[in-house]
Length: 293
Image 1: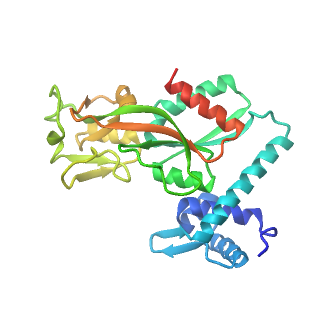
Image 2: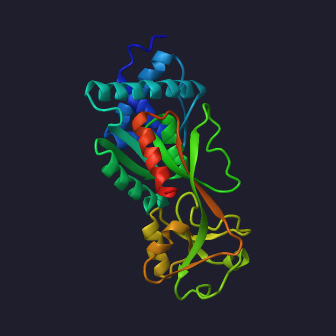
Image 3: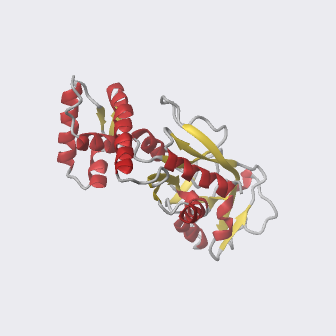
């Protein structure tokens, strides 16, 4: 087996498919046709003499061989990007850091960190993308993002069971609140309990974020929206209720009432990475400073 002749484009295509979990999604992200992506993966599989993905009806999953190749391919591509920065004569803290963030982190945490970085490290470029925590964990493994701001809920299990383990640093623990229409029957209660939440229609984002954790009933999700502003506008229209991370409470539109639930739920926000370059460590420091001034 000789991997030295494998084109870099094939490794990048493989990396994208591993992250997206789908040949068609990877093709869309890269601007390729699906047949071109399929050919690149087939060429890699001929070199390693084993399947890299298990094909399933709803996408693809890495095989054991695929996991091994992804780990090494990611390192190769990271090192090549670092070499490009060094050959360009950029300072150690210059270059580009790819930051992923779960949706509600875009309300306050990420923008404030980026503003601080523009002042303190003008040579550093940070590109960002949002996603679910699960999709961003896959992106970290595929090394298509360098660091990611992620959310977890009690009992705060590991982000995944892959090796090596993802490195994490806790940024914040915050209370989960409830957002209801201003004219909703719950809106003017001094406090509510989890029992009060039964029987209402919910506005949630995939995969179910927006529904109060641990409800002992089959909930009705009336609307699905990943964007927090869209969810809150739906609440304001009377379409349902949703959960709300505490930092976003000051951003609710007219027509929404924010309520605390007596059985308080906590959400932990962490920043995670596999390998931390010097530019990426600067971004981590800015995120930490933004939550622990």
